[in-house]
Image 1: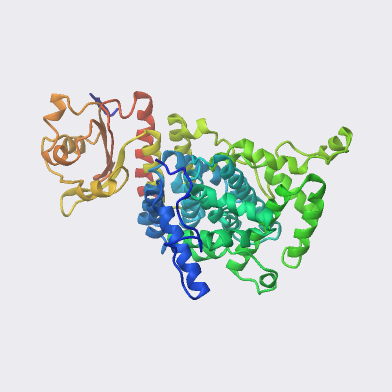
Image 2: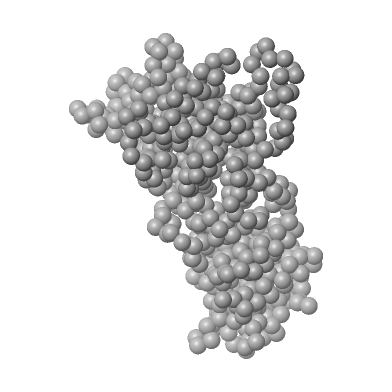
Length: 548
């Protein structure tokens, strides 16, 4: 047995000039240059308000730092995990999406970000994380009702587009889902940051009978979609996602198929369909449906009954997604009304229409939307540890890489023990040192660079632990009996109120160690959790000795 020792911006821009209506607005002779200048002007105003600059930096960190990576390796997976795991809420919401019907092709429940990257790839995980952050950022604005409605429409459009992609056997339905969700980014930003201009756009649509593109351009100088494309490009989203926001004209529908063209096609199709259905009175919805299907019929040959079934299924499976995107259930429930019997249908007709339908139908080829991924199941400490252990064991049954296993182990420790930091160290026998190689948590990049020491017969705690080959848990580092055996390098740079050290003992001796700490003096690992820690350690040692 191991030893246990003691102002968001919420107003409009009533005093700001709008295109062509006041001084200070950029003017150019060329219409293309004017649009570009207008977009830059709007982006500067948006970035000067509220919390967007800090938020933008986080988005860019996710999209830029890893944009050139195409496969999961030790450093890339670790870097992305570190960014995502900074936000506990984002971590759990992302796992809800990963465990939803959207990823029905994957086997088993996913309980760590590390495994999600291993199964789905860095690209999909990072873009999904960035997309959820956008919805999170827009959540608490004063225009909450308008934002919730358009956010729910965007989410449902993503689900419908993914369902259509699956029906048509298109690849990358996850990208289709994301592109359709982001299609209305520009409109969401205008509602959030320019609410008075948004009201003026709506007024012109009614009074002047303008479509949304013309009305938004007449008020802002650029369309909603142009603004969304510019912002998403500044956030370093992939070009194919940026270009998918551009609406489709009839001419574009006849162009040859390309990867980004298909993303653009389904994004435009699903958003146009949902928006028109929501805004149409009940008796006119069948006609609206027929009009949209006719317009896109050459490229998306889905019949009305098939599409209605996909729409109903998307609505029925929406709850895990609304929870993950922080969308109010009430805003999402309005889509259920699209499929209620029109006035005049007797109750028995409605009952007959619903007979034979399961209470929670799945998306095509799907499974339960979020099996076992309840908030309590994922967030409870014991649940994270138990699920993480099971996930690691499952991963090791087949072909695996040691780095993948290590990432899952560290993430399970970090989240399961609710640590401030967790670090993996590797021993260099030639140099006679122990040095940190990778970690998760607060300021971990700086910590990893400084966390190293010489392995010797010294009487400091770290060398005592290595010599004895047993883990130690320190509940209070300020205890005089503990403080006197802490090495100078640790007291100077890292002294944590509570921490643990678990050496990794192989047949040839100590090869490394795990270190984890907390900001408060308390049992960093409880007596009940020691078994989990020892098993995580032993799994890593087994992976080293038995791995391919």
